[in-house]
Length: 350
Length: 241
Image 1 (cartoon, each protein chain N blue to C red):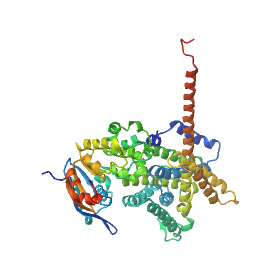
Image 2 (cartoon, one colour):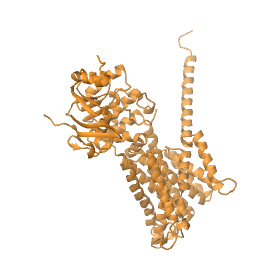
Image 3 (cartoon, each protein chain N blue to C red):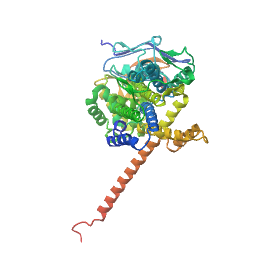
């Protein structure tokens, strides 16, 4: 039995509500600085997981949109002195850039390999460029791009319409969690509809989807744009969390890390990438507190282990194990029932 | 005389030094059943790909018209949207989806959200795929995948059906059923069948176009064409009985 459509669009409301309640109650038992960062990373991984796991588009440079979201927010917040318009622009600018790049790639009949190279090069160009923006010449309004040092001291999120009431600490944690859960719901909604099903078809066989009359390049461009907006939102939240934006948001490390999170958590699920980001992100933070082993070495080792032991990722492997167990229990129940019927004496016999 | 619904004018396609299709002028009338045959490398599949937009063309390659539209350079999905159903040489299906999901996705574009479910059930029933409807297509045998792909074509109720080697991997009774099915489709649609299996083409009947070295060698009724000495010569070196 195979129900890929149902699995992609199925919303497990019980789990979702339980998880949301746990996240809401978390500040009662823990500090919120680290959980906020993990929620932001989870949102970033979710954006790549949606695009890669369900439409089959692997971007080696997803950090470009994360970074664009962060820089757009910082630059516009410096110029406007408040956060509402910058927040919206942090979604809009990455989405527009992705729409243009996506349309060029997907309508241009470019193969997956070249697409990977293009996405990687876009990030590298942004990384190199932002590193070279030191000096007063690189200024957009009141915001100096700052080169390697980046942009510090921009206004952080405030209550819409009230720039004097800033959102930080626990309220900012709730904003980040709200964005994560909201994007998760949007992703599920996308996958449950006809658009999402066409994406699954494209992942399986783009040529066939086109031979069914669907405009595959338009669908791919659309999901590329939507996930870039999500990554931009994650970048904007990251800028607010760190209170500084540097070119490292465009770094190759950032792009590679999110790919590892998605692979380890489980491609083709939404929970997997988020879980991968949260667990491996936490591990990265813990490892950062010691100097004995290099962070990248540990992450690399984990990736190799995951690929060797659970190639589909942790969440799909768990789901497959649970399905096998349920099937085994069902067949055992059926066998026991048959034995009992055989043992029962036939009425009327002596 | 009625206007052709499909027409190529001076169509050529070159791959490096090989001229796979050489100045082909081909036309097809409404509700016609046409078999396009030829030995391996004759250019029939290349011509098929030119008709379906799978090979990118420009006007230096000649012209392709479908129902009066100049579709030269169109992408496959644009051509399909004219009401064309396409079955490719190697079964092109969505392996990770079930049979029902494959057919539903095809039906959804034409029949909308409300009609897609009913249409998918109808096609699956008609093709006898009910037993394997919930099975992943990637797990099926080659012949079954061929039938599933035919189901994808039928679910869109096209007026022009282009089938590239539909009988490949199908045996005995299944072939007879396929011939029956293609004739049934032909009652409401124009059908082009590309194949190199003479026996299958004989069973289908209709008009036959023979291709050889990228050009049209001969065209006519199947009995006449298949018994022609030139066709036998290019096909099996004149050893046919």
